[in-house]
Length: 135
Image (cartoon, rainbow, N blue to C red; front, side):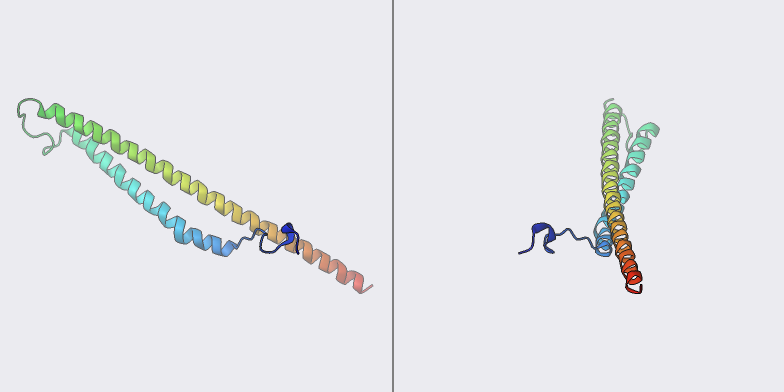
C-alpha cells in the first residue's frame, strides 16, 4: 500500500489547459454579462437623474393638486439612489470575480512554472548521468 503522499489518486493534480479552458467557458462569460448588465444600470441611473434634473415632460406633467412635482421628484431621487446602489453592487461583484479569475490564472501559472522547474531538474540529472556514463 502506498503512503498517502505518494498515492497517485491523492496527489494534487492540475491540468493548466483544462483549467484555462474552463475559465474561458464558464467564468469569462459571467464576468462579461455582469459588465454588460452594469452598463444597463449605469444608463438607467443617468436617465433617471437626467429626467429629474431636466424635469422631463412625461415625468413632470401637469400640476394636479400641487403634489405631483414633489412626488415625482421624490420618486426619481429614490430611483436614482437605488440604481446607483445596483451599479455599485454590480461593480463589486465584477471586481470580485475578476480577482478570483486573476488568482486562478496566477495559480495555473505557478503550477506550470513548478512543473517546468521540475522538468529542468530531471533534464539536468539526465545530462549528468549521461556524462558520467561516457567516462
